[in-house]
Length: 72
Image 1 (spheres, rainbow, N blue to C red):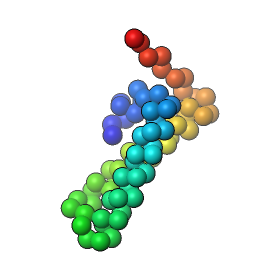
Image 2: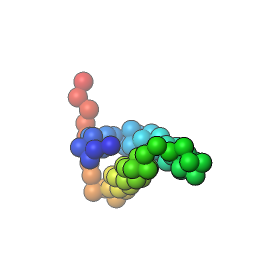
Image 3: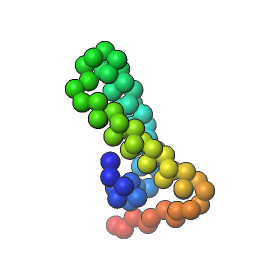
Image 4: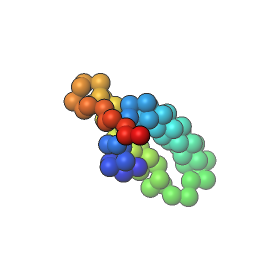
C-alpha cells in the first residue's frame, strides 16, 4: 500500500486496513512455513504496509495529524 493512499485514509479506514493486513500476514506466514508461498517479497511488503498504517494511527492518537474532512 502506498504512502499517498495511507495518508488520505480516515481513522476508521486505517483500523480496518490494520486488521486486514494482520490477517494477510498470518496467511502469508502460514504459506511460507508450509512451503506454498510463491513470492517471499509479498510478506515483506505486507509487513511494511502494516508498519505504515500503524505509524499513521499513532500520529492520529498523538494529535500530530488532523483528520481530513471528506467532501460530498
